[in-house]
Image 1 (tube, helix red, strand yellow):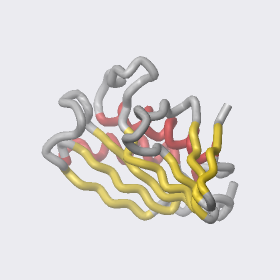
Image 2 (cartoon, one colour):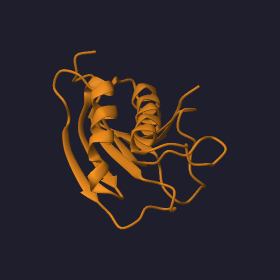
Image 3 (spheres, helix red, strand yellow):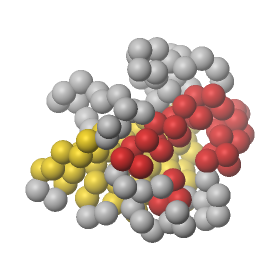
Length: 139
């Protein structure tokens, strides 16, 4: 069951879909005045292992985690207004876009796509962060 922890007007949102990091490192999702800020998510399973597959499969796993957090905050994926996508090989961007097209419809969120030299471990190919205005989308 999702949990929201309050710290004045900032709520920490958690979801079983996105295991929390070790204490004292970061929050996966904070909700502030109806805006959810989702940290850069990667395709690690509950066991800590990276999801097998290419950029498409990793992006799909990340969007599933994101959905869990956004829904735990009381929203829907249609509330996402911005995503920032980090990839280790820009030539494979279409694989990420394919996953994105399967998740978003209507007004797609504004998006930034950046190639980086590396992510937290060599088998990670994609990392995605997001901002959502809860209740602003179409449902």
